[in-house]
Amino acid sequence: MRTILDVATDRGSRYAVTDAPAASRAEALAVVAALKTSRRFARATHNSWAVLLDGPEGREPVKADDGESGAGAVILRMLERAGRVNHVVIVTRWYGGVNLGGDRFRHVQTAVRAALGEGG
Image (cartoon, rainbow, N blue to C red; front, side):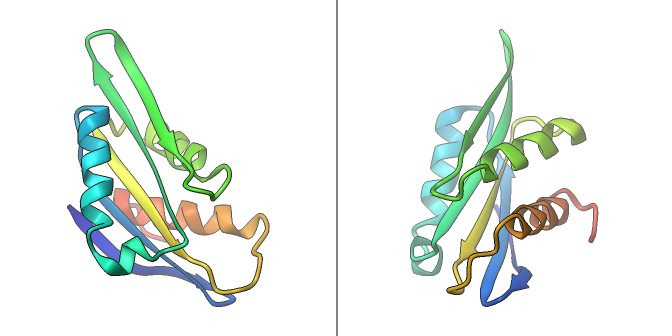
């Protein structure tokens, strides 16, 4: 499991991204649970995540918004475009007190790019 802190900041909100291999839904959930054993991440406002599983019956998309509506879908779409399978990406947000509107999706994308090694 690899975590990159402070991938983006905006109006008090801070973002981090974590990625790890996960070949099943259970493994992805275990990675999320392991991340939340850290008090810092357990207290985050949102831990949105997605994984594209490659199984015997084809690819299965799995995502969770954790209250950040639409964030899981953004992560999943980026994983699909990159062809990244069996790899969970978790975008963590600590809310800074100001609603970001659509800008939050830009920050989720920045975080996923960092996890995929695509840079800014």
